[in-house]
Amino acid sequence: MATKLKLAPFTKTGGYVVEDREEGTFRVSREAFTSQEVFEAERERIFSRSWLYVGHESETPNNNDFVTRKVGGREIIFNRDRKGEIHVFLNTCPHRGAMVERRAKGNSISFRCIYHGWAFNNNGTFGTKMHEGDYGPHFNEDGCANLPSVPQAAGYRGFWFLNYDAGAESLEASLADYKDFLDMVADQGPDGMEIIGIDQKYSIRANWKLLMENSYDGYHAADTHQTYFEYLIEAIGDEAHVDQNARVFDAGNGHAYIESDMVWGRPVARWSPKWGEGAKGEIEKIKQELVDRLGPERAERIAHYSRNSGMFPNLVINDIMAITVRTFYPVAPDLMEVSSWALGVKGESAAQRKLRLDNYLEFLGPGGFSTPDDVEALEIAQRGYQASREVGWNDISRGMLRKGFFRGTDEEQMRCFWREWARRMEA
Figure 1 (cartoon, helix red, strand yellow):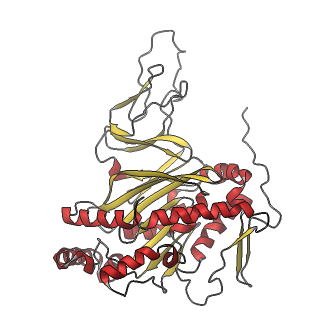
Figure 2 (tube, one colour; figure 1 turned 90 degrees about the vertical axis):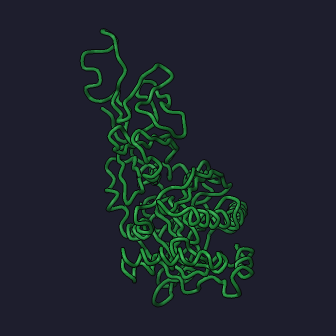
Figure 3 (cartoon, helix red, strand yellow; figure 1 turned 180 degrees about the vertical axis):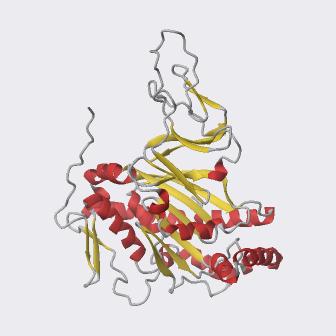
């Protein structure tokens, strides 16, 4: 009889995360970014038990469409079957383990393993014809020869997720108030949203948690991205700045986002002088459609304000001058692999799509103003952790004792992440 693996105690004297709410101090041990023990424990306690982003339904628009990718260290197939139902399969043959689909994307009514020819309907059903005597009379009655599904898969507003823990809470429960953020993204188009093109892939020689921190850290923007703000000042005037009154929203379960009134234009419906007068008319029409469909208050919030978000553990959706969807997985304590997608309004005009992609590539793309700056910052932080024996703790205390609401230049959004990380890792 199989026994369930029991995890060994995972502790550090005093803890990896130390918080004193009365004194307003929050410290994270730098061992959390460098330790092989932490890295191995994260694989089991976080990436094998959390809801992880798989993809957007727009990546498989037609029946029989599929994409393949690695999620949480496993190869998966994200597809629609002949009836249009979405599935998430483990991309491994139940016979001897070879991947059954090696293409990145395509359209197929079946999947076939090249090793021994086992074939499967795209709903996962085993479809190979066998001869009498090849297997016993009850072969596959329990489904052991079908293409294996992930233990849990579910979608919300077009975004699809999986969980490798069959006993984990539902996606709806796990998302908590992050659903509000996803709603603000999904509501931008009357016909929904879609991924534009394919993913951009790159690696960063730093710990994966640094990119989660960085992605909604308002404190670093003015210094790290000084060149971009100088460019904005030249393009739209001296009002270009970081919003000091941006506020933090704790969305529960380690998820959080910041909402800010930044000066850049937003294709959803905030015009910018650098786009010229010719773009203003279409932006006004888009804004009016939002008002008619969602009401003036919600339309204004969606159109005018920028949001940087993080869903625990490793999904970033930044809805700012354009929308990026980003995931990242650890390869080693000091190395991560990143995938990034552009998201846009389904059915928007060619002019709006060009404007959106220009905005995306200008700042959010791998060669834009932002990403190279951030990669450099994270990599030199990781190099600095070589002195962690002498300087052992990161400070994430900014704004802890602030009255009223937390600002985007505070660090409460990172504290939301680290509290959940500590709960899962140290409980």
